[in-house]
Length: 247
Image (tube, rainbow, N blue to C red; front, side, top):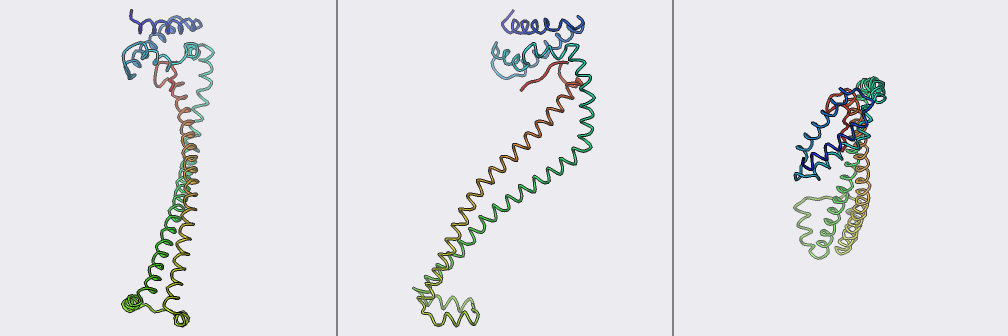
């Protein structure tokens, strides 16, 4: 007998000695099913043929004592008592859980959308302030060093300022007007940098919030999955009876 066969037989013997409370026919049937399951799992497990691959399959099944514990008369009675409770839990979960899940999903999506909108708004505001500031700086430099281009641009664009503003600017020289535009442009550029810094800090909060939301979603999904798997095992819907699949 090869090494894999010895490992399987040893594992089955350790399970068999812990099933002494079961009738012989039921005990033998379970051992046959378990043996078949082990060999199927071995064929489906990736890796090189050999003892290491078989040991991985046996480790996934769990300790023989734990595996046999689910087949004892006491465990069988506990399963029969637990099954109606789990079935009722599934019914209540279907009736009340689905609407609640839909509501929580909608609230989560709304929260994520709101957080994303704030982030996009901060970056957009920073870009808008930078664009406006850059434009004012260019206009100020043009007003100072190329007033002829300024007059030509004003004529072609047909820009008209309010009367009180135009009267106030009329008392200033071209250099002073350009200096005012430069100062306003630099102020807007500084505001753009400040908003960008705020957006960077908010982005860290945004990533943290998304990570927490994703962790909560995974936790809820794992709890639901564990409950459904428990009901399926109690009903014997898949796998040899008494075999608990472990990750």
